[in-house]
Length: 214
Image (cartoon, rainbow, N blue to C red; front, side, top):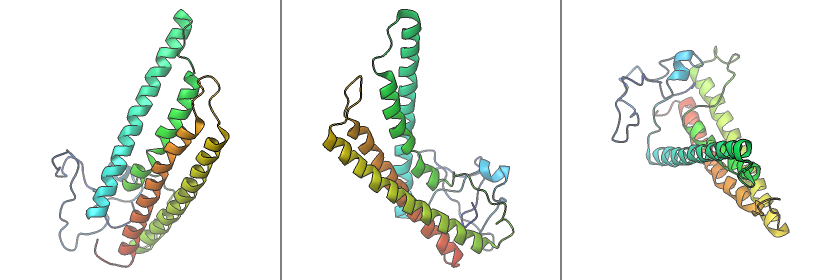
């Protein structure tokens, strides 16, 4: 991260009741970046949890979405293993396994974007910005987060339209006959949450760029 919240060693960071790191009080004059952005140490030590009611709520919801997506991926992997073993040994694959995997993977993958945004987990190419002042880097990070928010809203809008069109046309999977609009519609909440987290992070970066409270 290029902006206000410092990265802290996970072993030294105090943790709350749920085992999540709690942002410690930073002594006056020591605010800012403690680890060089983009370094191995920084990547291994993500920023502290967002503070404030909206930040904590967004972090909690995005974390739940990501956990749900992880559970869904585990279920899909287990189904694929059962289908492969059944096909090879007993000629009894799981009916429509490819369709289930295709729909489920799309829904599961979309759930991780918001949490990645909240934990500053996106890949950054900052070779040309490392020399810039911290506030300017914070402004660029905020601009990138705002653009991410706009893209997420566009994807949400077009995906919702696609779900409606699929519902109206009666589109269904070939083998199982499952309605296609359900899987498409389940992607929309993840991208709406992604847009909200992008907007929150953009505001956070812009506040730092303007020199306001961290």
